[in-house]
Length: 385
Length: 166
Image (cartoon, rainbow over all chains, first blue to last red; front, side):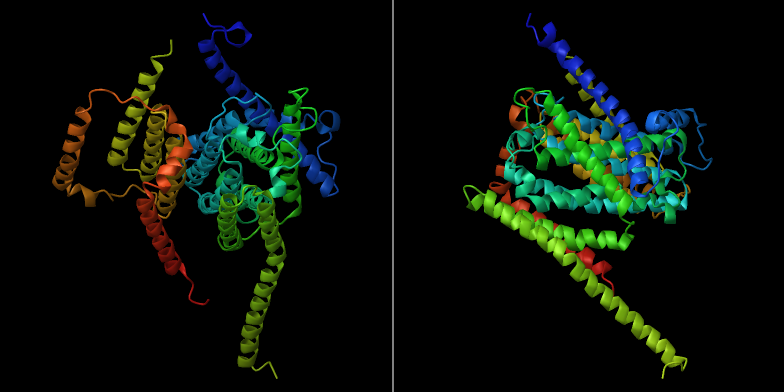
């Protein structure tokens, strides 16, 4: 009889491994959400010159646990005219793809549940499935605000999926593999992908913000205009599940960014002590989680037309050009790193420097139009000289 | 030891495809139809997975569940919720529908029954590189034709929604 790891029969180990992986994913998703809610409150409090939660436990650490218990023990309220099966299914449809994403994340050397050779495609696929749940939630709530939230979500997620995938394709072209483990292994040194492909990284960062419904792209649940969008009719733990899923997705896209552009679990001392890789991976992932919180505390929400215009008129053309240029360079040069970096940094500079110019031109155009109409009105009423 | 798993999952997916497909046709609630269609697509992806074609399975989910179903739901959201008899239009055409189904189903059934030896799924089904190579060499013409079609649809959509004041 063949002996697998820990002296367990390999066929049983295969099943056991899966059970452990799913258990760990549930553990990470739930506790990650608790930790991130606490972090978010504290960080936003610091940025807005408040104290944040401080009463429950030391530094308010137990506040999120108390909130979780409150959510769990809340009465399960369902409005009478909601579409029952869909209303109940929507949180699950949002939650399960997020949970499944954790399976392919490379936490450390040989510390990955499933090394799929199409791992990145798998993550993209699962990311595109959450929108189904949001749309269904918006529809099943039988509420105008929820429906608007669902519609916005569908439009926004479908639009931003395009630049997101285009950004991923650039990295895949450069590395030559879709496997998360191969991508990590391809950047062992200090020369991580972000130095070579910064524009792809920024594109992905913006698209990921939109994909996870975070500020400044949280239009599906815009409190100031849509009450709470697709979440309006939800309360208690169903509402909580949506939030756990959102924080889980933030973790997953942060982990993708850490793996694809920042070397994943690579870091000082990993060769000697492999378990350090988990620490580096977690640190890198949470750096992006904190970046998302920083952005949320800083930027105001966009308007829906600005959101769509930015995606279709700015991000997608630039990302398409980036793919074309990257593919040509990778084919043309034996060592494509330097020309790739030049093109990518130039594109990033174009994006950053070009945006204020186009915005200024638009602003001037709007102003002149307003002046004309005001001038006409004044002329008609005989006010202007 | 786990030999029963593959037939079990095949049965599960087959049941899902046929059951959800039948429900899509017979049900009256359009949201339920859209969601069950997503389930049919997902079960198809499961079939591809059983055949060892992981890439195709993932593309199936990405495009059909993630994009096409969302587009259909997007359209559904602009319709009314109440149970109106929108099915009447199609119900008058039952004999025609039956004839069309027969014309398609009979050859398919013959084709399905003509297989005796099950083809062994190749282990390379999940590999992207042979897939990409064949797409850009042997099948480059259909690929380009499809892309031209999509481009025409894209241009058409832009023309349709173009604002007059710009």
